[in-house]
Structures are given as C-alpha cells and as structure tokens.
Image (cartoon, rainbow, N blue to C red; front, side):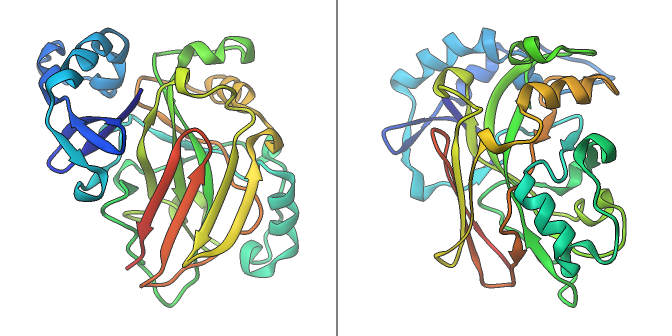
Length: 283
C-alpha cells in the first residue's frame, strides 16, 4: 500500500494514478490526552488501521495526483536520523572536493556516526525547498528513507525489518560550510520526504533499489541501495545501540556521489524504484 498525506492534512492511498481520500479511517485511531505521545500516532497504529484503509478505499473520493498537494507522509516524527558518507563513491567525492569538505577531515560512517536533523526542517513534495542562505552553496542529496514502525532499543541487524513501517524518498538538503552537519542540514524545508510511504510488502528488496536524481532534467545522481556501506539492517542496529527509536522516526540512509548545488527556479526530480518519483521546486 502507498499511503500519503495531502492538501489540508487529508489521508490518502495511491491507486491507479489517483489519490483516494481515506481520511475517514482516522476515526478508528485511539484517543489521547495530555501529555500527548511523542511519536507519530498514525504510524504507531498503521497495522491495525490497514483494514480500515482498505475499506475506505472502496468509496473514498478520488483525485488525480496532479491535482493534490502532497505533504510529508509522516506528520510527527520524534526524530530525524541521518547517515553521512554511507556510499563509497560519495565518501571519495567528499574527500576530494573542497567545496564539500571545506578543509575538514571526512571519516567513514563507522567513525563519525549518525547525526540528527531538526523536525522543523521536515517538508513534503508540494511545499518545495526554500534556499535560506543564497550567498552559500546548497546541495541536493538523494536518499532512501526508512520509516520506523515501533519502539525499539538494541535492535539486531537480523531483526531490523520487524521495526520498519515503510520506505520513502528523501532529499537531505545541505548548506556547505564548516558548521556541524546537524546545523547545516536542519534549515526549514531542508528535509524533504515523499511523495508517500510505501509499506514493506510493496518493496521486494530494499537492499536492491535503483535510485536517481535529476535537476532540470540533467542527471546528477544514480546508484543502487546495494552500494550502501552500512545496509538498512546495520543502520537500525547502529542507531538503536545509542538511542531508542519510536513509531514515525525517520532514518535517512545516505546519499551516493553526484551531489551538487541548486538555486531558486530549479526542479529536482528524485526517483527510487518501487517507491515512485518525488518532484520538488526550489525557491
């Protein structure tokens, strides 16, 4: 199933090039009182909600995809985790390109670890990327995003799949400079996720997905998730060895070589096989 959020926080399921409005299914979610949960309640209840979604699909209003504004498929992630230099070709690129490394030593992911991005940076496809510091270089970074489905700590690589609610496409937008990654990558609109959530049953092998990114039709990045230095299971194991994960947490898995600058007026087209295509305007 491909699940999206659209327009004014409506819930939808993608079917035959249309968005089917299944917002009515949200009535079956448990009620909560203050203090509200710190995780995403839709993702936490996605398995039990699925029969309701399937029933709502039968009579739900249908909208052509081109006529809706797609939001981030996850509304309230507790945290956004990200893996730096997790493709060998990007590691080499970062080490060899002064505009990327700014004179800093670029270590392997096993040494540098993961980093966190601010939740306020989260954006969906329709809202686009807004360049915050036009005097500095802002780069695109295409990534597969893992959406955590349940709470876990010290999760083994072998059991990681049990903690995944789905997959999406991510743009880890980045201002180049000497500040810490978490600061340069946490600007408003610099964590783009979409166009929807693909549940695990839609993905034959998340470790073997072709991915590509174009800017204004020019190919910039092309890779396959089999080239990840730390695969998805290893990343979940690595992350949960430091902190707990919760439903709706997002894990950006890393970008391949080909990162490059964008400017206002550009169109970014990011595609990952079996998930779809994310179209984003830069302003």
